[in-house]
Each structure stands twice: as C-alpha cells, then as structure tokens.
Length: 207
Image (tube, rainbow, N blue to C red; front, side, top):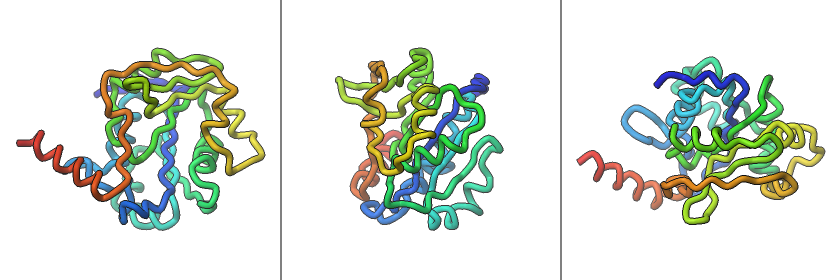
C-alpha cells in the first residue's frame, strides 16, 4: 500500500509493560507467519504515511528484540526505553510525545491490539479536530487507537506529573467519537488464553 504522506501526523505505541499475564512480551507475539504484533501495528501506521512513529519499551524488551526486529524497522521509527516503569502507561506516552519533532496530530495505540488497519486509521484522521481528540467506538464502547491534537500533545509534554491517568488528562479537551463497524477496536490480548483464542481463530481463517 502506498503511503499517504501525512507529514504532520505521528504515532506513539506504548509497549513498556512486563507482560506478566502473558508470560512473554506482547509486542513479540506472532500476528502471522511474517509479522509480530509490533511489526503489524507499525506497518499500518507507516502505510498510512505517519512521518514519525515511536515505540516505548522496557530495557529487557529492547535487548531481546533489537537484533531481529527493532534494528530493522523503517528509518522513521524510533524505539525509546522507559526506565521508570512505576509511572506506567502515561509516562511512556509522555516520553514518546517528547521525542517527536514535527507533530500536529498523533495516534496513540496499544501494543496488545494488532488489529488496527487503514480503514480505522483513515476514519479517525478524516474526523480529526484541532483542539481535542477522536476515539473509535463499537456498540458505544470506546476502543483504540485514539487521535490527539497538538494542544493535547503540548499539554502532556509540558506537564509536571509523570504518573497521571491518561483519561484524566484528556477530560478537559473536546472529544469526538466515531462509530467503527468492527469490534476489533476493543481487543486487548493480555493473557495466554486470549492469545490462544486469537491463534485458533487465525487458523480457522486459514483453513
């Protein structure tokens, strides 16, 4: 798929968790024969044309995946280590946003949902708003990714706290909810059982 060249659009993928319930790092789970979760997710944002993509990882994941995956990613993709894991997801997002050079809009997407695709990304971007964020919904339930605008990006970058709740940070801003016709936006593959169910489903599709 050709890139759309969205030079002012970026993506941040928080992936610094220890994946204790999965017992292996979720970004490295196989999506298919050719790609891991993180490669699938990054590929979708690259195909959309994001000018910068940042993956935030812990030190162990960085060392484990550098040779086979991270070192081979597109030049527009950077990998940052979060060495303050006690601050959890918000701090990872903050680190990612602080590293961006030229970003008016940024997608925030979880590494445990590999189902993001061009249809979802495009729908969110077409409905972007300049002083708030856009989120997808399925049956009135919110999912991922979300698309935040420059005022939110700056607010997070310059915030003093590192352990805030991301939802609380978004609350003062205007929100726009976009109905998406797939429950894939709600997926969170966090346990071995959930991943096995995903793998079994993929096998059914192949057959």
